[in-house]
Image 1 (tube, rainbow, N blue to C red):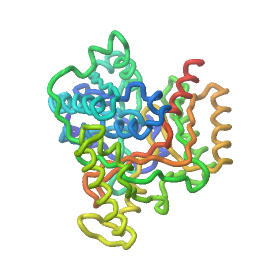
Image 2: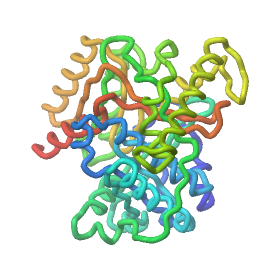
Image 3: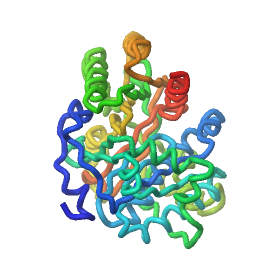
Length: 386
């Protein structure tokens, strides 16, 4: 595998149950870098009702980097930020985009955005590998999966009060492109009772032992749900048509919390969604928009299960299923095999990255009212007590 093509050359997995298997992962090249972004003070912002803004900036991290770097990059959305890998040969394009992201977060949202870059070679020399696999979600969408202690250790280095300055993105020119970012669906209501954001970390130093724990969690959750618990159903997908629904997208694209440019972005999104609604309802294909199959593609291309040395799921559950999952996880936690976090919401929030509407679009889903970020609060408390 060549350096720039490392990720693109990985053979995709086709079964999510294989994702925890150590044998499917490959060490990222030493010449690549771990890139981590997160909204500073995200928990407080979410508790203040700004979960849509936090989610938008998390997905915006992915959009900004993908638009700046012209090679396929592995990434994972974490709710209040993102983790990505990038070759050193492309840092010249990456760093201005990250500075632009930080500036946009401050100017348009009044939020701080942390961005750090850690060489993978340094992590590996310190005994912390960064391992990567690809998982094919659908015909058009593949997502990166990560393993190894490099991700959590790199995050610690970036957030360390003394060491972090070395890895922080340094001041300089900013240039960012958010083309393709869209946040245009109404909240997606549960078709059962609740949308559950779930995080699990295995408590095992041996990778094969940890893999067995994760596989057992996936199998047990699927058995309880009698399926994968996909949180997005075609009948639940409704495009928003009121201009105020597009505030986060308008802020991000205009760079301002209000004003004429902000209003224009909201108005344009509302008009496009009205047209899109007609095309989907009538099954028409027009203006480059495949109305007949678009809802089906959105469901297929949704990133609702992932692995980055933490198992992450957003699933649709009944109250009884939620209790069964929580009881199972609590038993395993008491036995010392894992730590976990759960967050319940009435609906899911979806944010999208659109390259083109005929298949090449991906959709990031999180629980409304906090989702992954608030589930992580419970998980971190369990880690601290452990």
